[in-house]
Length: 134
Image (cartoon, rainbow, N blue to C red; front, side, top):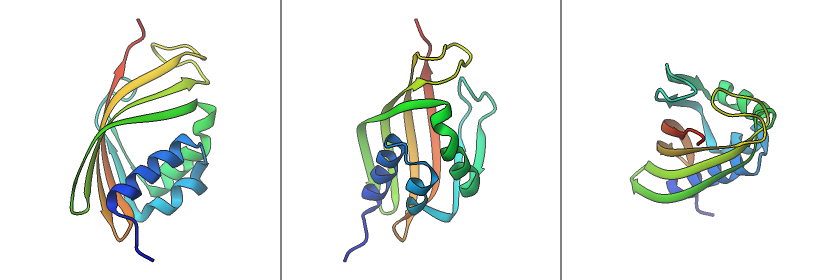
């Protein structure tokens, strides 16, 4: 059996997030030394860096914050183990957040750069541009 391509691995992670499978669904895609770096954005003006454990803990509680997450992938670029994904992300809020109320749809234009090694994601750098409600 062949291991998944880097693109298959990244798209598998996005589909697992959409399915709201929690940490158990995301865990197989993330290497033990996985690191997520988020550039500053509307909801996190200082940006953030989280390790695998922190990301999996967040995944366990994500359904308390959003539901119906969706990634509409518009473009991918792959070079070796590096995968770049441009997508439109959306979800329905389960809580009030700055700029949005519970029940509203939140949307962002995203670009993420993933590094994949041995069939698992070792790093992700995300750049999220949130659309303000009109």
